[in-house]
Length: 272
Image (cartoon, rainbow, N blue to C red):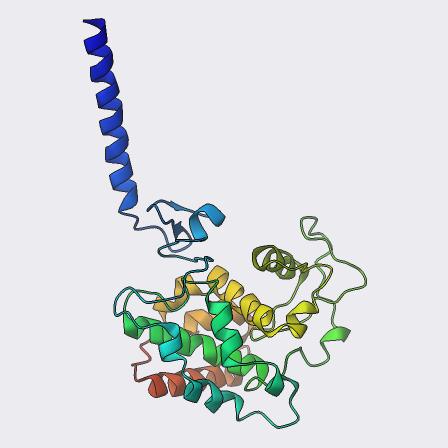
């Protein structure tokens, strides 16, 4: 009798665990959480790394929208990318630095990018990202912030990511990543010493795009479906509310232009 009761208890525990697993594997995670390859919600490499199914993924699986099966490479064609960078002057440093191949190499580490469910959603996210890339770098002309070395982007009270007094954390890359509290975790995620070698972002095009995509997945990806205005606020909220309406309009014009090129409606809520 004791053995029978024990066996029944074991079966009950297994059944309960199976029920919980099935429920967890339905995913439906919050926007800031990753759905792991096993269907569980959480953060960190175990959830956002290899096999991540949705959310701010950082794994190495190529990005393919689940809704229509169109890859980022199919959307960001040579024609699309070159149509942007070819508008930069011949003497621009970024002209011989940024490339479509470097971008696609970087995307391979962030398979959540351009993966919002439908092909149209993916196109809107890609159009939004490139609108900001274009605005921040002047059509991929600039690798580093103009006069950035003269700016102090060290948050000294941040003890988790302490500044190296001999390094500058000014804007670099397609989103012009700044501050020690961004360089530190970006470096940890990507695999370079962001605090002691921030210049890597300006010396390695793939790393440069990875920092932009890291920032995007951390701060922007979850608000893309709220409209382009929400992405402006996530990247540079100081421009919103009349702070720099000309810059907001410049970003919006780039976004609507790229949406048109990609054959997708830009949606609503374009301004912040």
